[in-house]
Image 1 (cartoon, rainbow, N blue to C red):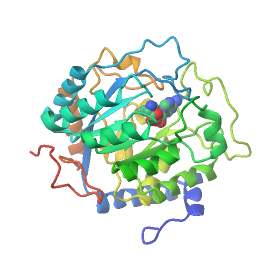
Image 2 (cartoon, rainbow, N blue to C red):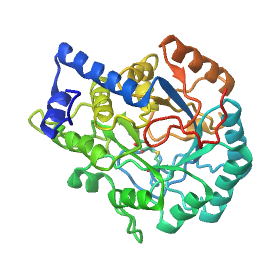
Image 3 (cartoon, rainbow, N blue to C red):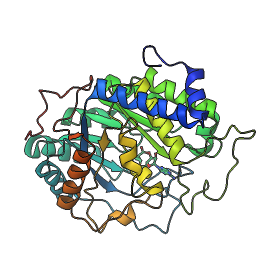
Image 4 (tube, helix red, strand yellow):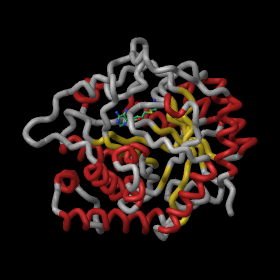
Length: 358
Ligand code: SAH
Protein backbone atom coordinates (compact mmCIF):
# COMPACT_ATOMS: atom_id res chain seq x y z
CA UNK A 1 0.00 0.00 0.00
CA UNK A 2 3.05 2.27 0.21
CA UNK A 3 4.15 2.25 -3.39
CA UNK A 4 1.26 4.26 -4.83
CA UNK A 5 -1.23 6.93 -3.87
CA UNK A 6 -4.01 5.57 -1.69
CA UNK A 7 -7.48 5.97 -3.25
CA UNK A 8 -10.69 7.33 -1.72
CA UNK A 9 -12.40 3.90 -1.46
CA UNK A 10 -9.25 2.53 0.17
CA UNK A 11 -9.24 5.34 2.73
CA UNK A 12 -12.85 4.52 3.63
CA UNK A 13 -12.01 0.82 3.80
CA UNK A 14 -9.17 1.47 6.27
CA UNK A 15 -11.35 3.76 8.39
CA UNK A 16 -13.95 1.01 8.70
CA UNK A 17 -11.62 -1.90 9.29
CA UNK A 18 -11.70 -3.58 12.70
CA UNK A 19 -9.31 -6.43 11.98
CA UNK A 20 -6.27 -6.30 14.27
CA UNK A 21 -4.02 -7.65 11.54
CA UNK A 22 -5.17 -5.00 9.07
CA UNK A 23 -4.81 -2.25 11.65
CA UNK A 24 -1.32 -3.40 12.46
CA UNK A 25 -0.51 -3.08 8.74
CA UNK A 26 -1.99 0.44 8.59
CA UNK A 27 -0.12 1.70 11.66
CA UNK A 28 3.15 0.11 10.48
CA UNK A 29 2.77 1.77 7.09
CA UNK A 30 2.09 5.16 8.71
CA UNK A 31 5.09 4.81 11.00
CA UNK A 32 7.37 3.74 8.14
CA UNK A 33 6.14 6.64 5.99
CA UNK A 34 6.77 9.09 8.82
CA UNK A 35 10.27 7.71 9.36
CA UNK A 36 11.19 7.83 5.66
CA UNK A 37 9.68 11.22 4.81
CA UNK A 38 9.80 13.20 8.06
CA UNK A 39 12.56 11.50 10.03
CA UNK A 40 13.00 10.54 13.66
CA UNK A 41 12.37 13.94 15.19
CA UNK A 42 9.44 14.72 17.43
CA UNK A 43 8.97 18.49 17.27
CA UNK A 44 7.87 20.48 20.30
CA UNK A 45 5.91 23.70 19.81
CA UNK A 46 4.83 25.73 22.82
CA UNK A 47 1.08 26.32 22.92
CA UNK A 48 -0.01 29.74 24.20
CA UNK A 49 -3.77 30.18 24.48
CA UNK A 50 -3.80 33.96 24.22
CA UNK A 51 -7.56 34.60 24.57
CA UNK A 52 -10.75 32.67 25.21
CA UNK A 53 -13.09 35.37 23.88
CA UNK A 54 -14.99 34.19 20.81
CA UNK A 55 -17.61 35.71 18.53
CA UNK A 56 -18.63 32.37 16.97
CA UNK A 57 -21.28 29.88 17.97
CA UNK A 58 -19.74 26.57 16.82
CA UNK A 59 -22.03 23.84 18.05
CA UNK A 60 -19.23 21.71 19.51
CA UNK A 61 -17.00 24.26 21.25
CA UNK A 62 -17.04 25.33 24.90
CA UNK A 63 -15.59 28.75 24.00
CA UNK A 64 -18.67 29.67 21.90
CA UNK A 65 -20.02 33.19 22.45
CA UNK A 66 -23.37 32.13 23.99
CA UNK A 67 -21.51 30.38 26.82
CA UNK A 68 -21.99 33.22 29.27
CA UNK A 69 -20.80 31.26 32.32
CA UNK A 70 -17.23 31.16 31.14
CA UNK A 71 -15.02 33.96 32.57
CA UNK A 72 -13.13 35.45 29.62
CA UNK A 73 -9.47 36.55 29.47
CA UNK A 74 -7.04 37.99 26.96
CA UNK A 75 -3.28 37.86 27.60
CA UNK A 76 -1.33 41.10 27.25
CA UNK A 77 1.78 41.55 25.10
CA UNK A 78 4.18 41.10 28.03
CA UNK A 79 2.56 37.80 29.05
CA UNK A 80 2.76 36.52 25.46
CA UNK A 81 6.41 37.56 25.14
CA UNK A 82 7.22 35.88 28.46
CA UNK A 83 5.68 32.63 27.19
CA UNK A 84 7.67 32.97 23.93
CA UNK A 85 10.89 33.48 25.94
CA UNK A 86 10.14 30.29 27.86
CA UNK A 87 9.64 28.48 24.53
CA UNK A 88 13.00 29.76 23.31
CA UNK A 89 14.74 28.82 26.58
CA UNK A 90 13.32 25.30 26.38
CA UNK A 91 14.40 25.13 22.73
CA UNK A 92 10.92 24.75 21.31
CA UNK A 93 11.03 25.43 17.58
CA UNK A 94 7.87 27.54 17.52
CA UNK A 95 5.13 29.08 19.61
CA UNK A 96 1.53 28.47 18.61
CA UNK A 97 -0.65 31.46 19.50
CA UNK A 98 -4.20 30.13 19.70
CA UNK A 99 -7.48 31.80 20.68
CA UNK A 100 -11.18 31.94 20.09
CA UNK A 101 -12.16 34.22 17.21
CA UNK A 102 -11.50 37.40 19.15
CA UNK A 103 -11.52 40.79 17.41
CA UNK A 104 -10.14 42.25 20.65
CA UNK A 105 -6.95 40.75 19.22
CA UNK A 106 -6.36 43.74 16.96
CA UNK A 107 -4.47 43.52 13.72
CA UNK A 108 -1.70 46.04 14.45
CA UNK A 109 -1.33 45.05 18.08
CA UNK A 110 -0.78 41.38 17.23
CA UNK A 111 1.52 42.28 14.30
CA UNK A 112 3.66 44.21 16.80
CA UNK A 113 3.74 41.27 19.25
CA UNK A 114 4.64 38.82 16.45
CA UNK A 115 7.44 41.13 15.27
CA UNK A 116 8.87 41.33 18.81
CA UNK A 117 8.76 37.54 19.13
CA UNK A 118 10.55 37.07 15.80
CA UNK A 119 13.15 39.81 16.31
CA UNK A 120 13.86 39.73 20.03
CA UNK A 121 12.97 36.20 21.11
CA UNK A 122 13.77 34.56 17.78
CA UNK A 123 11.38 31.65 17.79
CA UNK A 124 8.96 30.60 15.02
CA UNK A 125 5.34 31.78 15.24
CA UNK A 126 2.27 29.74 14.32
CA UNK A 127 -1.17 31.34 14.55
CA UNK A 128 -4.54 29.69 15.15
CA UNK A 129 -7.02 32.52 15.61
CA UNK A 130 -10.04 31.54 13.53
CA UNK A 131 -11.39 33.19 10.38
CA UNK A 132 -9.92 36.65 10.06
CA UNK A 133 -10.08 39.17 7.21
CA UNK A 134 -7.36 39.10 4.55
CA UNK A 135 -5.75 42.35 5.71
CA UNK A 136 -5.20 40.91 9.21
CA UNK A 137 -3.62 37.75 7.81
CA UNK A 138 -1.36 39.73 5.47
CA UNK A 139 -0.18 41.97 8.33
CA UNK A 140 0.62 38.97 10.53
CA UNK A 141 2.47 37.16 7.74
CA UNK A 142 4.52 40.30 7.10
CA UNK A 143 5.30 40.53 10.81
CA UNK A 144 6.90 37.08 10.57
CA UNK A 145 4.27 34.47 11.48
CA UNK A 146 5.08 31.44 9.29
CA UNK A 147 2.17 29.01 9.76
CA UNK A 148 -1.60 29.46 10.16
CA UNK A 149 -3.78 26.63 11.44
CA UNK A 150 -7.49 26.63 10.64
CA UNK A 151 -9.28 23.30 10.86
CA UNK A 152 -12.05 22.82 8.31
CA UNK A 153 -13.52 20.19 10.73
CA UNK A 154 -15.60 18.47 8.03
CA UNK A 155 -15.84 18.75 4.25
CA UNK A 156 -19.50 17.65 4.36
CA UNK A 157 -21.19 20.91 3.38
CA UNK A 158 -24.50 20.12 5.04
CA UNK A 159 -22.91 19.04 8.32
CA UNK A 160 -20.47 21.97 8.25
CA UNK A 161 -23.29 24.48 7.86
CA UNK A 162 -25.32 22.81 10.59
CA UNK A 163 -22.58 23.11 13.23
CA UNK A 164 -21.11 26.47 12.15
CA UNK A 165 -23.80 29.17 12.33
CA UNK A 166 -22.94 32.09 10.03
CA UNK A 167 -21.61 35.27 11.58
CA UNK A 168 -23.54 38.38 10.57
CA UNK A 169 -21.34 40.74 8.56
CA UNK A 170 -18.52 38.25 7.98
CA UNK A 171 -18.21 36.62 4.58
CA UNK A 172 -15.28 34.38 5.35
CA UNK A 173 -15.47 30.65 4.96
CA UNK A 174 -12.89 28.10 6.07
CA UNK A 175 -12.20 26.30 2.79
CA UNK A 176 -11.76 29.59 0.90
CA UNK A 177 -9.55 30.93 3.66
CA UNK A 178 -7.17 27.99 3.35
CA UNK A 179 -6.37 28.92 -0.29
CA UNK A 180 -5.98 32.54 0.72
CA UNK A 181 -3.51 31.61 3.47
CA UNK A 182 -1.40 29.75 0.91
CA UNK A 183 -1.45 32.74 -1.49
CA UNK A 184 -0.34 35.04 1.32
CA UNK A 185 2.66 32.78 1.89
CA UNK A 186 1.74 30.93 5.07
CA UNK A 187 2.44 27.28 5.63
CA UNK A 188 -1.07 25.98 5.92
CA UNK A 189 -2.44 23.84 8.70
CA UNK A 190 -5.92 22.36 8.90
CA UNK A 191 -7.66 19.27 10.10
CA UNK A 192 -10.79 17.66 11.42
CA UNK A 193 -12.58 16.31 14.44
CA UNK A 194 -13.27 12.58 14.28
CA UNK A 195 -16.73 11.41 15.29
CA UNK A 196 -18.80 14.59 15.02
CA UNK A 197 -22.46 13.48 15.34
CA UNK A 198 -23.65 13.14 11.74
CA UNK A 199 -20.15 12.53 10.29
CA UNK A 200 -20.08 9.48 7.99
CA UNK A 201 -17.15 7.22 7.10
CA UNK A 202 -17.50 8.36 3.48
CA UNK A 203 -17.25 12.04 4.42
CA UNK A 204 -14.25 11.49 6.75
CA UNK A 205 -12.54 9.62 3.90
CA UNK A 206 -13.14 12.66 1.66
CA UNK A 207 -11.68 14.92 4.39
CA UNK A 208 -8.49 12.84 4.39
CA UNK A 209 -8.24 12.89 0.58
CA UNK A 210 -8.60 16.67 0.85
CA UNK A 211 -5.54 16.87 3.12
CA UNK A 212 -3.65 15.70 0.04
CA UNK A 213 -5.45 18.01 -2.42
CA UNK A 214 -4.85 21.01 -0.14
CA UNK A 215 -1.20 19.98 0.31
CA UNK A 216 -1.41 20.68 4.01
CA UNK A 217 1.81 21.33 5.90
CA UNK A 218 0.22 20.67 9.31
CA UNK A 219 -2.69 18.32 10.01
CA UNK A 220 -4.64 18.23 13.26
CA UNK A 221 -6.81 15.16 13.80
CA UNK A 222 -8.59 14.96 17.14
CA UNK A 223 -11.52 13.05 18.57
CA UNK A 224 -14.78 14.93 19.04
CA UNK A 225 -15.38 15.29 22.77
CA UNK A 226 -18.84 16.46 23.92
CA UNK A 227 -18.41 19.83 25.65
CA UNK A 228 -20.94 20.62 28.40
CA UNK A 229 -23.34 23.42 27.56
CA UNK A 230 -22.92 23.07 23.78
CA UNK A 231 -25.66 21.99 21.35
CA UNK A 232 -23.73 18.89 20.23
CA UNK A 233 -23.35 17.69 23.82
CA UNK A 234 -27.08 17.94 24.31
CA UNK A 235 -27.50 15.11 21.81
CA UNK A 236 -27.56 15.36 18.06
CA UNK A 237 -28.50 13.07 15.22
CA UNK A 238 -25.96 10.44 14.41
CA UNK A 239 -25.59 9.16 10.85
CA UNK A 240 -27.84 6.09 10.37
CA UNK A 241 -27.15 2.56 9.10
CA UNK A 242 -23.67 2.10 10.57
CA UNK A 243 -22.33 5.12 8.68
CA UNK A 244 -21.59 7.17 11.83
CA UNK A 245 -17.87 7.57 12.62
CA UNK A 246 -17.21 6.72 16.30
CA UNK A 247 -15.50 9.44 18.33
CA UNK A 248 -12.97 7.12 19.88
CA UNK A 249 -9.23 6.83 20.17
CA UNK A 250 -8.78 3.98 17.70
CA UNK A 251 -10.75 5.69 14.93
CA UNK A 252 -8.79 8.90 15.56
CA UNK A 253 -5.54 6.95 15.25
CA UNK A 254 -6.74 5.43 11.97
CA UNK A 255 -7.49 8.90 10.59
CA UNK A 256 -4.14 10.17 11.82
CA UNK A 257 -2.27 7.25 10.22
CA UNK A 258 -4.11 7.87 6.92
CA UNK A 259 -3.25 11.58 7.15
CA UNK A 260 0.41 10.55 7.31
CA UNK A 261 0.01 8.30 4.25
CA UNK A 262 -1.52 11.10 2.16
CA UNK A 263 0.90 13.78 3.43
CA UNK A 264 4.18 12.00 4.24
CA UNK A 265 6.11 15.17 5.09
CA UNK A 266 3.52 17.08 7.14
CA UNK A 267 3.73 18.07 10.78
CA UNK A 268 1.08 15.98 12.50
CA UNK A 269 0.46 16.64 16.19
CA UNK A 270 -0.30 14.05 18.81
CA UNK A 271 -3.19 16.27 19.87
CA UNK A 272 -4.15 17.34 23.36
CA UNK A 273 -7.64 15.93 22.77
CA UNK A 274 -6.06 12.46 22.47
CA UNK A 275 -4.73 12.90 26.00
CA UNK A 276 -8.27 13.72 27.08
CA UNK A 277 -9.47 10.28 25.91
CA UNK A 278 -6.38 8.37 27.09
CA UNK A 279 -4.43 10.49 29.61
CA UNK A 280 -1.52 8.12 30.11
CA UNK A 281 -0.71 6.84 26.65
CA UNK A 282 -2.90 8.59 24.09
CA UNK A 283 -0.34 11.00 22.70
CA UNK A 284 2.61 8.61 22.75
CA UNK A 285 0.70 5.94 20.90
CA UNK A 286 -0.14 8.56 18.25
CA UNK A 287 3.60 9.21 17.82
CA UNK A 288 4.02 5.58 16.71
CA UNK A 289 1.09 5.82 14.27
CA UNK A 290 2.07 8.83 12.19
CA UNK A 291 2.35 11.84 14.52
CA UNK A 292 5.57 13.85 14.92
CA UNK A 293 4.67 16.96 16.92
CA UNK A 294 3.66 17.70 20.50
CA UNK A 295 2.27 20.94 21.85
CA UNK A 296 3.36 21.43 25.46
CA UNK A 297 1.23 24.10 27.10
CA UNK A 298 2.87 27.43 27.98
CA UNK A 299 -0.34 29.29 28.88
CA UNK A 300 -0.05 30.78 32.42
CA UNK A 301 -1.41 28.12 34.82
CA UNK A 302 -4.14 30.37 36.26
CA UNK A 303 -5.64 30.90 32.78
CA UNK A 304 -5.46 27.32 31.52
CA UNK A 305 -8.71 26.08 33.09
CA UNK A 306 -10.54 28.92 31.30
CA UNK A 307 -9.40 27.81 27.85
CA UNK A 308 -11.89 24.99 27.58
CA UNK A 309 -13.14 24.14 24.07
CA UNK A 310 -13.76 20.61 25.43
CA UNK A 311 -13.41 18.98 28.89
CA UNK A 312 -10.70 16.64 30.16
CA UNK A 313 -7.69 18.57 28.90
CA UNK A 314 -4.66 17.46 30.86
CA UNK A 315 -3.99 19.82 33.72
CA UNK A 316 -0.78 18.83 35.45
CA UNK A 317 0.93 20.77 38.21
CA UNK A 318 4.20 20.50 36.24
CA UNK A 319 6.29 23.57 35.51
CA UNK A 320 7.31 24.15 31.87
CA UNK A 321 10.83 22.92 32.74
CA UNK A 322 9.53 19.72 34.31
CA UNK A 323 7.27 19.12 31.33
CA UNK A 324 10.17 19.63 28.94
CA UNK A 325 12.36 17.16 30.85
CA UNK A 326 9.60 14.56 30.98
CA UNK A 327 8.86 14.86 27.26
CA UNK A 328 12.55 14.61 26.29
CA UNK A 329 12.87 11.48 28.39
CA UNK A 330 9.72 9.88 27.00
CA UNK A 331 10.72 10.74 23.42
CA UNK A 332 14.21 9.27 23.92
CA UNK A 333 12.68 6.12 25.43
CA UNK A 334 10.74 5.69 22.19
CA UNK A 335 14.02 5.76 20.26
CA UNK A 336 13.17 9.17 18.81
CA UNK A 337 14.88 12.56 19.15
CA UNK A 338 13.54 16.02 19.95
CA UNK A 339 13.48 18.11 16.74
CA UNK A 340 15.55 21.23 17.14
CA UNK A 341 14.35 23.27 14.21
CA UNK A 342 11.06 23.71 12.45
CA UNK A 343 11.05 21.42 9.40
CA UNK A 344 10.66 23.02 6.00
CA UNK A 345 7.96 22.14 3.48
CA UNK A 346 9.73 18.92 2.56
CA UNK A 347 9.99 17.81 6.15
CA UNK A 348 13.72 18.42 6.38
CA UNK A 349 15.42 20.53 9.00
CA UNK A 350 15.54 24.04 7.64
CA UNK A 351 18.91 25.77 7.57
CA UNK A 352 17.21 29.16 7.46
CA UNK A 353 15.34 28.70 10.72
CA UNK A 354 16.41 30.96 13.54
CA UNK A 355 15.49 28.49 16.24
CA UNK A 356 18.47 27.50 18.37
CA UNK A 357 20.30 24.23 18.01
CA UNK A 358 22.00 22.19 20.69
N1 SAH B 1 -10.77 29.74 17.13
C1 SAH B 1 -9.72 29.06 16.42
C2 SAH B 1 -8.90 28.18 17.31
C3 SAH B 1 -9.70 27.05 17.75
S1 SAH B 1 -9.38 26.36 19.29
C4 SAH B 1 -10.37 28.29 15.30
O1 SAH B 1 -11.57 28.18 15.28
O2 SAH B 1 -9.65 27.82 14.43
C5 SAH B 1 -10.56 25.23 19.11
C6 SAH B 1 -10.13 23.93 18.47
O3 SAH B 1 -10.46 22.96 19.39
C7 SAH B 1 -10.95 23.68 17.21
O4 SAH B 1 -10.15 23.79 16.07
C8 SAH B 1 -11.50 22.30 17.36
O5 SAH B 1 -10.91 21.43 16.43
C9 SAH B 1 -11.12 21.91 18.77
N2 SAH B 1 -12.38 21.64 19.46
C10 SAH B 1 -13.34 22.50 19.82
N3 SAH B 1 -14.36 21.87 20.40
C11 SAH B 1 -14.02 20.57 20.42
C12 SAH B 1 -14.67 19.40 20.88
N4 SAH B 1 -15.86 19.45 21.45
N5 SAH B 1 -14.03 18.21 20.76
C13 SAH B 1 -12.81 18.16 20.18
N6 SAH B 1 -12.15 19.23 19.70
C14 SAH B 1 -12.76 20.41 19.82
